[in-house]
Length: 478
Image 1 (cartoon, rainbow, N blue to C red):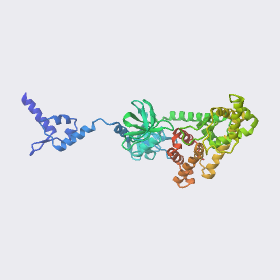
Image 2: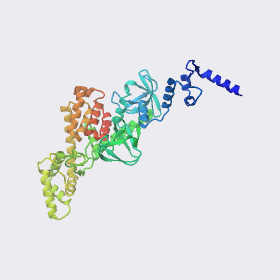
Image 3: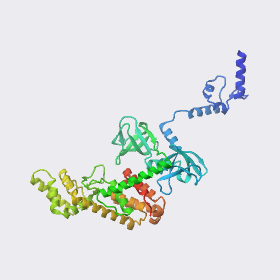
Image 4: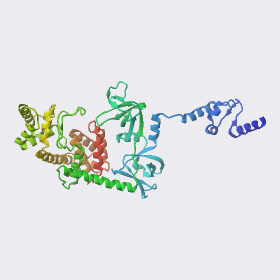
């Protein structure tokens, strides 16, 4: 029996080992190390291991060690690409074979992630949902730029896995608390710290802050590619939505004009604003720039609100005073005093943007009654038409915009914040060296949107910016 064991051992050594003379040590070849026998070899007293072989075994074990949360995230990131349409289209086509004339088997949303399987000459073989196929390299961004693109498009989110946590103003330990993030809630990621130990999240459109990465789960979001039939159904649904938005204009009393640019801008801003003719509020503390009142279905602010109120009041002074007075409660003396003060404010020339002007609860009730009146609603609709026309003229005359997509995007920005709209548009023109090139370039709208998303003011309203971008992309360029 012992002889048999000895023979088997000799056969094993002759088959898998190379015996070297001199130092009296058996050097274990790479094949043995890679055969998942590293642990047995290390424990063996029969085969002393030289330093080179030991280093290989250690590396082998490291490959199978548990990855950290960030290592797993980066590994997944390294296998992804972000599709990018050079024509600013809403979708990029996935082909059955790596050639331009091949059958289209899927449609993946622009700026969304796909899994890269392999590279075939000028094409990437990709997988998105249940669809596998090929996309030309010029439509896929890979490597170091992937994370930045995903972050810009809210393609990465984290879920707080532990108890509620304080949001810090800084990634450093001394950052002050600015809010609370809640357990099991998911939040879009704005950025990671350089060492990836902290993550900055967007809790609301106006509140963002830092959390420790160890307290969250990281998820890379992706929209699955559509089949041809799913894509056609999607287009039909989008058209129904577009018609519903235009109907919203009619419901607000603003008739369609037949001018696609004007009607689209009207529907766009109607969607982005409250739509409530009796809306009235003071400046909100979370919006640092707000000092005064905002009113109406189109959210007129500051002097625009002041001018509209003055216009409504002066159109029928007697009726306006009665509306204001009837909306108030209390003694006649109290009512008369409030109405007198409010009417002086409305008809006065003092700027509501150069000083803080807050209205009392009684004044707000009175103003809502005035702007919600029959003639108040009619004048709001008229003011909206005039304002939209004026903004289109600014886009065309001041910035020489002729591309309807750019004009619509500019007008929505201008409605929200004129100064930043001007700065963003100028930056987009500078990017292409001229307004003419901005109008002609296929990715002109995309560049303007990217600049807007990075703006310190308008970039905070990412939901509005992304919606506006999606609407403008559907418009014809000429």
